[in-house]
Length: 489
Image 1 (cartoon, rainbow, N blue to C red):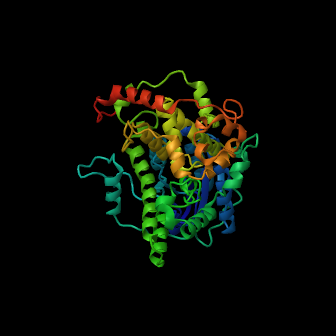
Image 2 (image 1 turned 60 degrees about the vertical axis):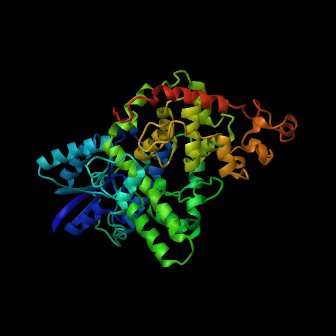
Image 3 (image 1 turned 45 degrees about the vertical axis):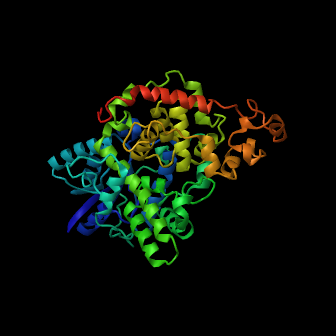
């Protein structure tokens, strides 16, 4: 058995289902768990403010879990990741480094360079997949090209062997010498200087144990109603596992296996349907990773070249700010944007609604929305964020057709029928009757006065006329409709 190995933790902040850790434990007597904080190496996609908050608490939870098992987390910050690795290699005498692969474009290139340098110096490097169900190259069409439509992609995934073998957290780990210096998690300055994070702290508990508890609670309480309940922002019927998945506190393999085991052990009608629908949503995350790996330019540019010609507005700063602050005068949109600011999360149905308003009614480039989500979401995942925004804007794989423009009033009435969601996040409108809650501008003056709603005063008038702006968007989309769709940037 080789003596010492370094396990480099990245977006896999867990001890269960961690192949890099498992391989190191099988082959080495001493293990040094390492985290390197180098956001500058992530180019334009370093963690946003909300993600930084989550990362702080997730690292703290990982370190506590390691210490409970006799180990500890070494945190390094100086220079580049390669610098930090070489420094710890020299200090420890380790001969092997293990990590789990990342699939973002900047990470792929960085890891390739690090691997080349380390192997030339005689260091053994072992890498594994721990963040996706399958390697991105493993699921392709018969001609070897990547999928761009979800349904055939997911069918191809389901033809593979699932569920997967999962491994529990080790009961004990080798001690890490006090000789190795470490920065503190606090020194990374991931928490906000001005403490705006009380809403995040009230809504979330980062860490591996919390992720597993959340999955169990979801399966027990909500998965049976998931096929329709997942569209209801007024109810707690989604798993809310997305930030745990992004930071690797739980593996997609465990989610699939645990969901299928749960359904098999129960006799509740509709449970298999519910778990299948839930696993399919995990499949959308998988599809996002597949797309970003094969089409790395899509973080900033549309998948299809013709959309580079779309005539977006160029002067929109005040409208963008109103959208960001939840002051558009469109209640369900404002509710979603305020939920995002307060909790670092937004219900997926509402994400589509607010994105549609920004890109198709306000004609503001989708990249502006993607950037705002990146900074404010605790589950800001580059692949999923890119897929979601390009889907809504109509410029990406399996995208919503150009003529599909979400009507936020219709959406609110359908998916928040009693107005609980709007009333919670837009309390200015709480006393309006249900009939007018999603569209207060249609209420008679006496109804508005009785509810103490004064449009343009204590609640904004609509930023845009929904009908007229829809027509304007369709007109602009027609200008690129006949350009070749299959041309890529």
